[in-house]
Length: 484
Image (cartoon, rainbow, N blue to C red; front, top):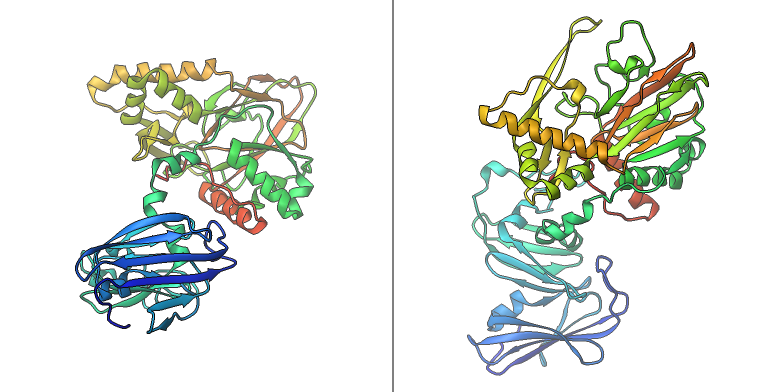
């Protein structure tokens, strides 16, 4: 590049008719970016004007000389830049992204006006070159044991659809796709207003329904099925054949079965010596299943195989516990804090069964992330063991516990339904509590068959279907305690 003398004006222009594929908005016509230096070592600025000559941005460049102009302010292009030495004009005809770097920071000013910054060390750990990331598996090959604690940039330029980077110290030259930088801008991704979008709205109205035969072979119907579960935490599948183990097919549309101490499937039917209270006629309080697991089941499926007309009672009840917990925070913040701090005991200890079980797990009822947002709730009175807490926490715990219980019973958001043969209710076991009214069989049979799917596999399949069907969406929190 020719040396730039005093009072030099460098103009960078590009023609952009379609915009870059990763940009949020399309820009058309001429877009002019002017980098002006009033002399070597003096401060300067960059300005951008739209096709009508209106200034759209102005950025201070700091001390400018021909090196800083060449290295730190470059127009993105899918084609090599063409320079005319006579008038210092650099032309491209593709993107409108401005790249600026210092030793510690890379800043990209996207053509839609968004400006994102990335730390030099973060960039090194996310290098996409073949030495750092395997192309086909997508797995990271980076030798983290040989890396220093921090990095500084030595150079940065845009080539094609990548940012080509060189770091000082270890002579590593790498690349990162522009699309990756725009998607994984950590400053934006970690912002509270973004994570707020993952908070689900309260369940209102009737429980949404899908048809069994539609979801078996129709991708759009499968997407709607999972969308209902993502938004509401619950969905009713109708017209499921009343055939043994068909519940597995309803579940496997989403993901493989998650086996438990009850097997791949379980039958909720009255027995003489029940190994679970559900296998009797008693009512069941609101609860989650298997909270004594480190990772309790995610989605639960209950398929009604039989519910004879003579059976009285036995209605299924459901309640979104996330919103009850949030209500408690607003009304009783001190009691809410107790349930976030004091660990409850959840247990399943049962030796009088074919395969004895002894499982005990302690954790608070409510889990928060770094922004004090609720990411997990654990509630299962039937499987709670003795409280093991500091003496000063015992009474405050039971007081807070009682308050949360009262909020549940007083809630107007409870859902109640009597499952009929061919119905399969599907719900998020991490978010939606379920229970049952007591019943009298009167010589008849009430028979539900159930199974589970891992919550993370459900979330993965929903995101995949959103992308495949062209229905982008922000997945709601599913209760897996992920901080985002």
